[in-house]
Amino acid sequence: MNNITIEIKDGIYYLGVNDRETPRFENLWPLNNGVAYNAYLINDEKTALMDTVKITKSEGFLHNFRECIEGRDLDYMVLHHVEPDHAGAIQSLREIYPNVTLVGNKQTRKLLKVLYGMEDLNFLEVKQGSELDLGKRKLTFHLTPMCHWPESMVSYESTDKILFSQDIFGAFGALDGSIFDDEMDYDRIQSEMRRYYSNIIGKQTPMAQRALKKLADLDIEMICPVHGNVWRTHIHRIVDAYTRWAHYRTEPGVVLVYGTMYGSTESIADRLARYLVEEGVKTVKVYDASKTHPSYIINDIWKYNGLIIGSCTYNMDVLPVIQNLISLLGHYKIENHVFGYFSTYGWASGANKKLKAFAEETIFDVIDEKVDINGMPLDEDDDRLRLLAREMAARIHKEEE
Ligand code: FEO
Image 1 (cartoon, rainbow, N blue to C red):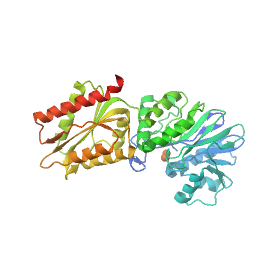
Image 2: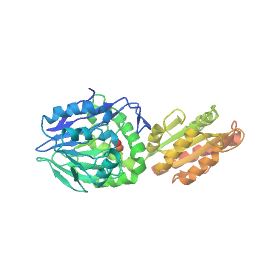
Image 3: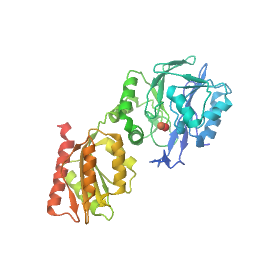
């Protein structure tokens, strides 16, 4: 049994499970530190379960759920988000509690049918601002479509001022014995939360902005997301950080990513990194795209305002790992970045054209300095690298002036 139950408020239980087995979230994003699937039970005059967990973890979850509900019937199952990592125990619970009412919105009902074949449901459809009375407590629903799926919604419990926030404020990482934010290292949580935000919700940033605006007036004393820890101490800090990410607010620094086969592009990246530092850039993060998964690189791109991508030429194109990165970046439509690029080739140029096309499609502030190096860099190539570094340093620090 890998899960724990904790009474986080009088009659409200944390029923989360840790998953350290699944290698990748959505079969795409590495879970090197695992991930937690969180559910919560409110034992009031009515009982309400807030979401469930992934099916592979449902047995332990159901065991602990039974302990916390203390033999009562389950009145409501609130489905804030029905991606399979939160929907794995819905059917089992329906069989155990045939009278349970599922609570969701119009899109929830559609997805339950399409994804899980669930029809003829005992279903309560809620809209923006709908309320659900549980006795001493009352839930108010706010629709937050595309944070992360179309049916995504949150609920606010006004007695204890709790926001059940589904994927919003969620993070990668299993909870290694700590449930609350004040029991964990804030920097680690923040980084894994930003990696979750940038890679999972980042594509829908305008919708995240809308959701945050909707929630801005709520008096929140606790945030209970479906991934990551429960927030009760650093609420303002994390809401501020999340708001920054959702508005593409960055800090000065350069992410320098390269794709190399035999090291010459890498040596140019190292040279460029040095020139950036000489130009006064305090943070330069250099990544080999063949070695580091793009989710970590994108996490840093979300944090810093400078980006340089370099690639060797491969089949008259960029190296496939660079292609993968620029394809992901193309989805995100990131704002507030200065972009530069460089390329290398042995006998025929190709990568430069591709990087230039990528630059033209972005809304980045592009540095128009062509650096396409044939073999080992000559003096004039080196001059261009220095110019690229100088221009990058000047532009990323411009807002500070
Ligand atoms: Fe946690 Fe969008 O699933």
